[in-house]
Length: 229
Image (cartoon, rainbow, N blue to C red):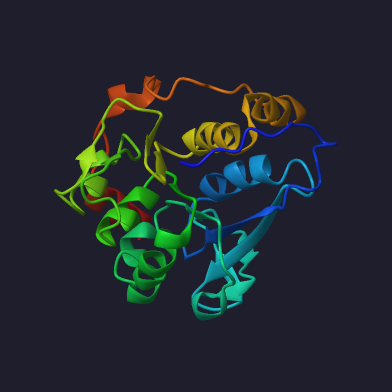
């Protein structure tokens, strides 16, 4: 991950051009997977431009119900410096979305950072983007991610994992910790801590400490999807 140790504050040097983050939407995405990280990246104005992107520029329903409007269709999305892929129960169908997979394959090489939260890493793995790299995912549904590729070095005990430009987080709330770690790399530790303080968030800084690893594969994805259908 490339770094930019710039002065972190709401009065940060405005000569630093904002970075553009593209947040992927698909039906059944997890709300906190998306909005936890976006809250962190958007907390201080002028530092990041955030776009949402999906199959079409229209509202996309989350797993919890509320919809988020996609700013762009994949084919119309502007250049991106950062990419965020959330997880959610909709991941099962998203794995078969070739337009989404092709978008990630096309855009990831030009991005400074590609992030996933929860089962979003399963999508990156299915796209072949994590081949030969270390990555993690939601612990209760860990096998669901590992089943997508045996070319990934899956890490069971990790809150998030960084490997080159790819940063993958464990389940749901872990995405917010990951986002702050990415902010620290891009804008400096003090900047990231300022964001955490401003949002009154207790930042878990240790990427290797995952208290939820004890629930490894506690949930069967097929049984879960059957219960939800």
